[in-house]
Image (tube, rainbow, N blue to C red):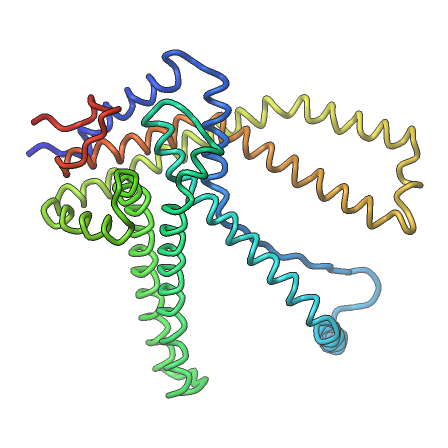
Length: 340
């Protein structure tokens, strides 16, 4: 029996080489890398803290007083905190939605060998929104599967840390691992197979229904696909790490020069004197903006250097899909359709 997951590697690699290197087009690389960058931007978050270790010893009294002060500050600024959290959630959801739409733009770009970012975004806003809602529903279901058992245990047994609690905890960790694996498979299959089905005209639910019917007929092939995808992902991670080190080394010299020039200019104009008093918040805001812009530029350059990796995986899933589903045909990629 032919193993489609293995047979799909070589044609996907050949398509990647043909798209990106025959011929090499820098403008195409820059635009497609931007799509890949936006495709990976759906998510974020972080935390911050201000830790002052100078003056006084750490003890329970100081900790209790600090906690009380923090609690009072939170209660006094609850409205501002709620607004900030709401804005952060909206930003995360917006980036998430943009990244989902970019699934379709990236797919179309590698199929047609042409990148249309703005036009593509407008074209796939609706389809992207449906996948966005589907992913949110899966995420909420994942959270409920975690929260509900904990709440049920609490209302029945309370915070009882006896033998039953530890048994529940071990079973919960095992179930959480299985649930996380299931969620990753659903997310991966949505991107790998359902998005191409939607590209061809199906809806997200219709795409999943058709995919399930195909998966049932190819259980062995799908299991092999998952195994190969993990192996290829590990290899890609190693390759990506090597590329990242090379990029950082290349950027290290100009980066050091820029920092030294900034220090010299700052000393010349007396930047430390300017950034004091009422101007300090402005200087901090400018520094934060520059830092964020620098990080985003660095991530984009990393994406640009690693562009063959996502292109290969996009072709790989398409090739495998044409192997297990003979009805799935893309005229622009005739060489990737299964033999009749």
